[in-house]
Image (tube, rainbow, N blue to C red):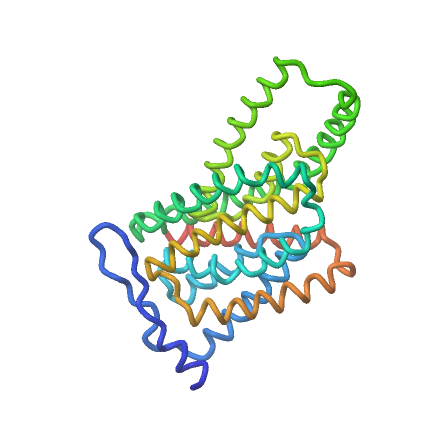
Length: 300
């Protein structure tokens, strides 16, 4: 069975919107569409491995191919998820005993938020979500622009925290400081719940926000922070993916095709990253983000 025929077998994607029937995705797919989706995923995987922002390419590509917006979002999550899981494995050596003690509350909160976000998405009418899409893309683009300066500030802040922590290491924390730490942890978990809901709902641009949250919670090693961020986002996207799977909104032929493209792009991006100017890639991602935002604003 050829690729054209395989894609033509894609099942209708349930919208799960109130009172709306399931939307037909592909009845007849020109060969140009799978080729277009493969290369869109290839570019998205490359961008994610170098600078991030791959969803600015892969998600609109699915919309351009006629997939309804909620199904496109679910399919995009499925297509890019293996890449984040692979990145988590690369950070496994950064999970020290202190980091592992922080993981259970972060992962439990992330699972709850991911299910909530995915459920909210599935109960959003297609037309409503389509009106929200340009705002989501624009917001993610603005966060991406700020991610460079924010990363520098986070690095400086974590170094200052590490110095302070070393100075306090010889004595126990006073009771007031322990109470402050518990309150900070509770506030941090509430903020993480909100971020996890956003990841389950859409998720683009959440990485830098998760790093800022981990710095707020007291993490001091930027490599460990990247590892925890990647693990938490992978778990949240994983439970969102299971929710989408249960609701039958993932368009599997397109998703699997894009998994291959994103994986190839991620490997190629990692290989050529040392030869590329990350700032140039960031400018490209920002330009694409603004272009996609403007397109969907004008379309609606």
